[in-house]
Amino acid sequence: MRILLILFIALSLFACVRAPYYKSPEQQSLSDEHFKVATTVRTDAQDAFVAFTTRPGFEQKEGPMALVKVDTFLRAYINKNTRARIFEVHQLINYTGKKRRDYETVEYQTARGPKSVGLTQLRSDAECLLTSGEVCNYEEHIGFRVSGKLLREIASSYDRNKGRAPSWSLKFVPLSGQNFQTRITAAEVKGLLDKMSEYERAMM
Image 1 (cartoon, rainbow, N blue to C red):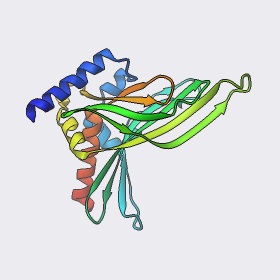
Image 2 (cartoon, rainbow, N blue to C red):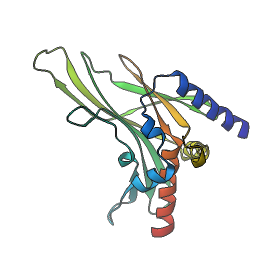
Image 3 (cartoon, helix red, strand yellow):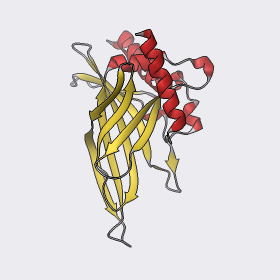
Image 4 (tube, rainbow, N blue to C red):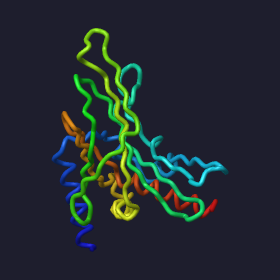
């Protein structure tokens, strides 16, 4: 299994070199401690779950309006009664075109080989330009569940002393149009897991 894990990490890093991922040098340098501090926790006495998200950890804004065109982040939940954990990957994509892409599946690498799973459409919006009825601005917020075991494997590859975290590669495949490729750093994954463990030790 250790050999498989090493191969999984190596394949992820190799893919990151070759593919045109949407990722900034600033995000690559962020540490696990940064994401642990940035991860927000939401709980209510009436809720059965405690919710966590890494979304505040990094947002790349564009243009004079400082809009977030693309955002990749993690959400997680702890069941207060059973202590069971649920993990989700969320992807926000804004684009301009003549047709909605309708992202359907995501492909990623695991220690046991490649995997493809269906996506849940969490939000979908369109705003067509007044100058042309054929071109619209689209927003798709999609997500999928991921196992805690896989996230622990990714987090274990992080070494703060190296200054740059390895990444987990994701490819979102639409019904029509181009694929969207991105990645999540091991630092972000580890920061989320550490925040959840800290919360459990202190509050549960």
